[in-house]
Length: 608
Ligand SMILES: [Zn+2]
Image (cartoon, rainbow, N blue to C red; front, top):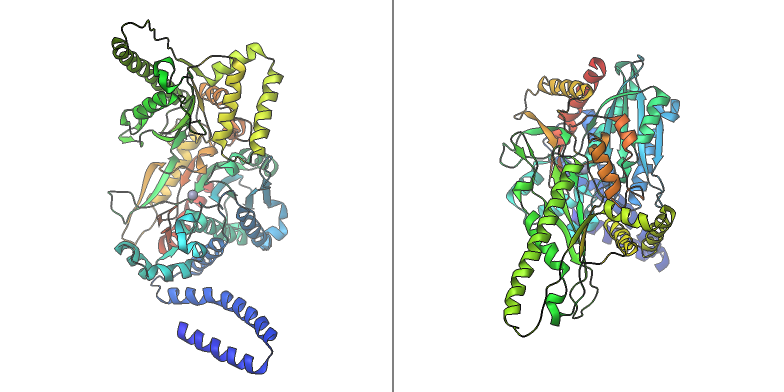
């Protein structure tokens, strides 16, 4: 193939050189390269597809084609690409006859106060029979970064060229097998989750073309920023509640088509559906030490000692993992630990900041915060014991000196610290101080919400005029509320049982795998924000201990409680999400899954 192309190139080049002037040649070469680039992908695609053993139906072919188009648009979280892909999908849907007739059923929902002007998409199709039951499909249009592809970064969004390159590399046997099978599509976002979005849109298109066959309504929500701070989904509850009022929609449950994969240690050929989702909370610690020189170690307090003590108690500690029936989450682990010294000096590190990952099945915010605070207090005690014990040794070497160890470490929650400050200053003054801090961080171009939170804590600590050493415990974004599928709520019970029944009755003849239903989607996802199962106490702990709450990050708990959507992840099947070997299984995702989701959708709309 390449040889032929090179020959054609030289033939063309010689012909043109002999008959045309140099500038003509340059001009024509540019056009030629442009056309070459346009067709090259098609050539690679046909080379790969020739090998394909899967025979796709028209629906499957449409989903595959749309997946490719979506992967071609690089849409890494927090880049302009998410706007490009949003516009692409919007413009495509706008051309459907249904949206030409019902333009107000296709909506761009802008994110609040977003200087990037990002938007979520909502596309509603109403059935003809006046049943207001509505199933919501959830998907996200952003992806993680493409840095992992290293020298192949340029091909991360060009599946077929990428696969041809991979074929020439020394990759492991399973990857080679998948590459040669023709059953897998590689590329960033192929599995997480542009194929899922393509599938949802293809089903929506089918419903829109035959509204008589739709026993209710389907609403597709495609969000941005899922792979970063879930800002898209955090903005969705309120407009969805408003849309329900305007269009008379009764949301009965949601289907997410996000990435699923083989479960370790189980039969790799099984497929999985997950009811509900795992939650995550990120408790943080700000430590103020006691200034001293390294020549007088016992005269001060090193913040690294306390943070290390805490980290060694939390990291990998299975006793602190959350349990649910016979299952257990991964243990807590540190996500960051640093002292805030900016350059070398002979002083003990005076300030420190660390935060930790806590996963949960159904453990509430208040309970996790209690556990964290207790560990911080225990760490303070053991740090002090350690110092005191060593001080006795030190003192025994200096018998003639009159030395006292004067050390205690106070522990505050952010809420307690703020109370102290509110007793000194009026609320407006404190608010103005926080706003100042935030506009300064933004001016500095800092995007990390954890750093924004830290700066607030630092300012509040200064205003408190308290003396260190001390520890302040608080929360930083993100917080993913867990969704317990077995919660005592009739809506959850009903939707989940319909989904389970539809899956168990689904005909899988001719396939050598089962679809296994499990509780809790094991990866964090937007589905967390479809309901809030915490109680009032959880809500208060969150609002009062997350300094960044309501300042660019918050859950609209009131609207989310109204939405109260059970979510089933009936997801695409893939491998290697977030890695450079990310790939989606075409036959299951584009052939089996759409039929299954269509059947779940229709059954839930009818039976609810
Ligand atoms: Zn995803």
